[in-house]
Amino acid sequence: MKNLSERISYLKGLSEGINVAELGPQGKIMNGILDVLEGVIDDICVLRTEMEEFKEYVQSIDDDLNLLEEDIYGDDCIYMTCKKCGEEVYFDADVLEDDDVIEIICPKCNEVVFVNDGSFDFEPSVMESGIEGENSPSPDGRNSGSAGN
Image 1 (cartoon, rainbow, N blue to C red):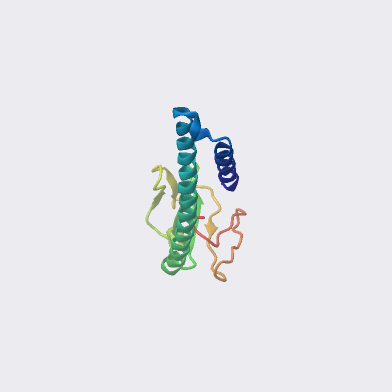
Image 2 (image 1 turned 135 degrees about the horizontal axis):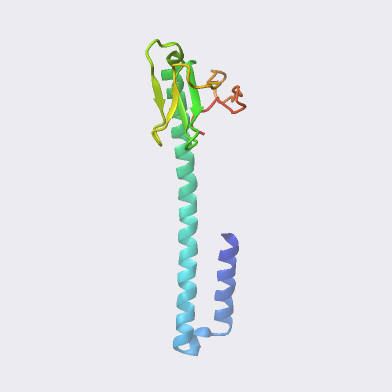
C-alpha cells in the first residue's frame, strides 16, 4: 500500500510541477482524480488496519471458544472429517460404547459421518488435553490441540 501512496504523491508532484491546473478543465479533472485516488488509498489503509484488529479479535474469540469446548467436552471428545464436505465434526467419545444406535450427522451437509453400530470403519481422532496452546498430533496426523483452526 505504501508503494501506491508513493506513486500517487509522485504524480501529484509532477502535476504541480508542470502546473496541470493551468491547463484548463482537463487539468482540474486530472487534479481531482489524483485527490480522489489519494483519498481511496487513505481509506484502504484505514480498512486494512481495522481488518487486522478484527482478525485479532476473532482469534481471541476462537481461543476462548476452544477453552470452553475443553471445559464442556473434557478429554473425551472425538472428531471426524466429513467425507462429503470436509467439515470437522466433534462428538463425545461415550457414543462409541452406547448401546443405542446413534448417528452422528454433519451439521454442514447433513451427511451421516458415523453410526455406532459397527458399520463405519474408521480410526477416531481423540482430542488429548495438554498444556494450553500445545498441539498434539492425533492418530491421523492432524493437530488436535485446537478445535476449529
